[in-house]
Length: 139
Image (tube, rainbow, N blue to C red; front, top):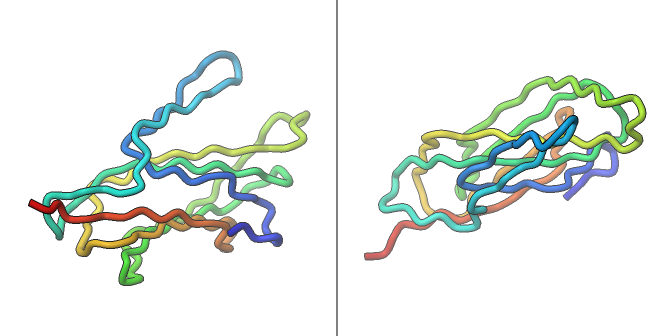
């Protein structure tokens, strides 16, 4: 779901085991994504998990913005939330600015199995979400 009111359009959210930004030349960065997560099998619940998130945005104009990341359990409980102001100043000749953000979440406490929802907000407005499942291993 991408809002028509926002200055930003969400291109993608990737939840994965690992993500690395690699400098491939002057002004060029590439992202290596290892093992995207659609379903994570854990030995027991409650447990802790560690994963990375990569988000891509298209911006309509260059400006400072507030970006938010939120993780919700199947029960609707918010189990992670972070907002910060990011200044984005691309080259003045860039007509369609893009932003790629990547970060890791370590030792997130998981109290239940089910479908978890990761949401992204831009200047306080939700611009998209991605879901993934966490299941207890069956012996």
